Length: 234
Image (tube, rainbow, N blue to C red; front, top):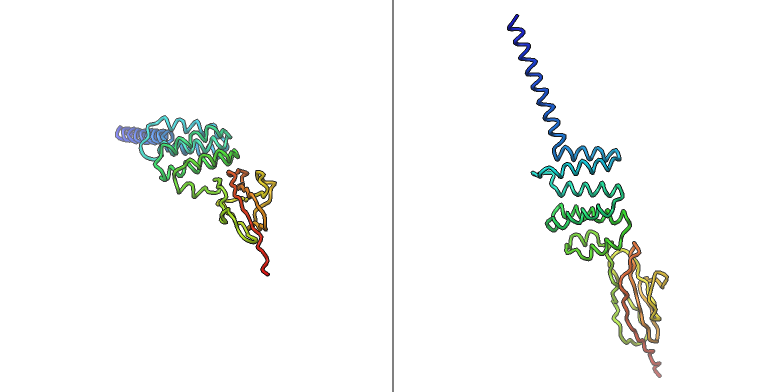
């Protein structure tokens, strides 16, 4: 009888120890950096972005040791702040991660992805274009080339020509070239460039501007063309 009681006590003790151990592990896991990140993702999926940010702040207070890194947690925080329309803080965090990451590394590229996302969500395309202009990563500039502003380039060089000529221009990026022939500054209300500008005899000051799909304007380029009428042969 006594042996049975002792055995029962041992079994109960073992079960209690295992239960305690499991609860301790579960608590530890839930409050680890990864656990807090997972909980933040769950809160965000339910639309509770403020609580998600709070959980990420708790995770960031824990010393980093492997994955997830601080930068990963900060970028996730920037994502949730963007969802909350706190664009200034989201952009500030993404910029800090970008500056603290090795150029063209995965975290560097992820930071630029968040920067672009925040700027487009807030429709601050001028800010985004300025940031990209200052970026020295060819990979980033190529990936987000449509947000950059490119000046038009004269393919037909300004100068003096005989007879009639067709002036050709080009510009990189996704947008439209507008031009004037009378020296006025071009705008989106000016003539739209479409494959060439035919000029007969006369003197013309061609001014052109490139406006990208987001309404951002390039610098105005200008060129003077003199077209001399050809004399009729007797």
